[in-house]
Image 1 (tube, helix red, strand yellow):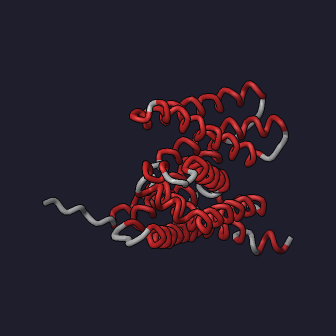
Image 2 (cartoon, helix red, strand yellow):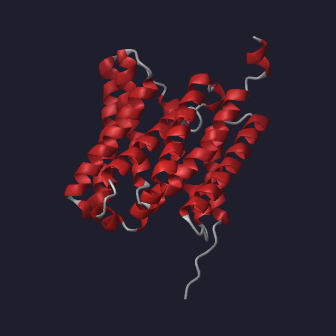
Image 3 (tube, helix red, strand yellow):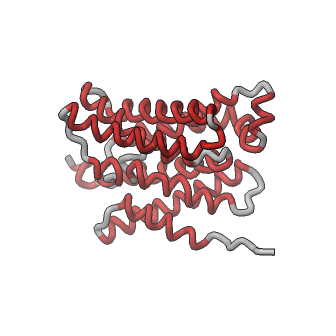
Length: 263
């Protein structure tokens, strides 16, 4: 009892730290691969999985990861047929996935706090939320340790990588899985919508004059951690919602991006 009263902030704080580090690191790789739109797709595709998992009485996080990954796979398969219309295909699958999730809620007669799913409720985070985030962190770290060079090759020369021995489709699938894990594990912190900001703005800051993907990831994670901690402690101090505040700070951080020089 004394733990829950005196240390109620511990799980939210740890979740803030790992989310702030993990999301920008993944976002850096996705931007390098020109796949950041996939984040938007996966974040909307988790809703059908959440609804089905709740209807079946299983962990909604499992359903969300599977659903998000299926959405990414469907979009990837369709975009291979119409590569020039990649963004249009992704947006169509995004809208369809979100619509399916909304339809499933009344069909299954379940209740989902859509506001918490979309915008998060960091201060109610518990041990299971932290464990999911740690699993996501470990999966992405494993991918970076054993697939870093291949991922860099795919980002720089996707056609050349496809013509070599690199299993491009498998690596993209692994990256999609890590992304889906990160989004679902971040639901408690900033929600599946606001996580897009955390995957994007610190990444843009980290990429400024970065000499390598590894350096860009490290810098992006540091910026993400700083933004997340400032948002967390400011929200605690002024009794605000941490998730939306972190997203607002992400937008504000774009003001520190250097202007492009026009020749």
